[in-house]
Image (tube, rainbow, N blue to C red; front, side, top):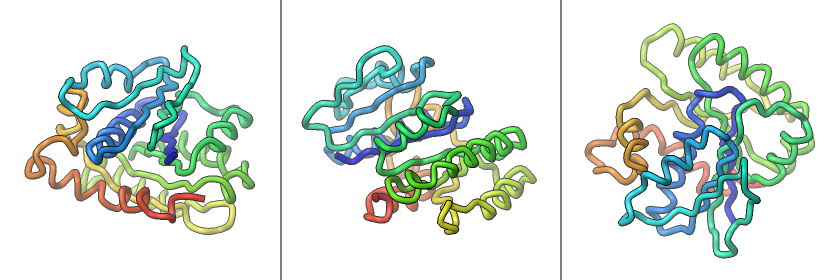
Length: 218
């Protein structure tokens, strides 16, 4: 089973947006998708509750209150991790269950400082990160030609994995109303007309290529 973890302990960074749009993307491609929500805010479960009956089914698990029992026929598992995840043992457990980890980052000083602390905690788990999981970042809610966007780009250039390789930033995603409309309706941007979401789809393309390649798996 393909397992993808969306992780950042700071709330409001767009984890649920990434997770739900990935779920919709794979469901549209006729994969049996499980969406596992560890965040008590239940953003992904609320998204599933709003999902139209005529759209491809996605199995949801409210992991903050229920046991995680993934169906045997599941092909893709997408995990929306909880906020405030800093404990090394818990962090290691989440990483061990995943093949690929996506870390959304926001272009603000507070978010970059929080991300720097979290990435230090993550990289301290050298064996897990180097051998058992593949990690990439996503620059989220970016606005072109702003100082905040420039600062985030410069910050991302400094990030390194424990083995010395650059931590990849695979996508730069704009602050788009398409994500708001998709969230309201329980859909992903990949379930809207291509012409209306072309720019957003193009921004997702590098991330999806990575996830669909062997480079994103141990």
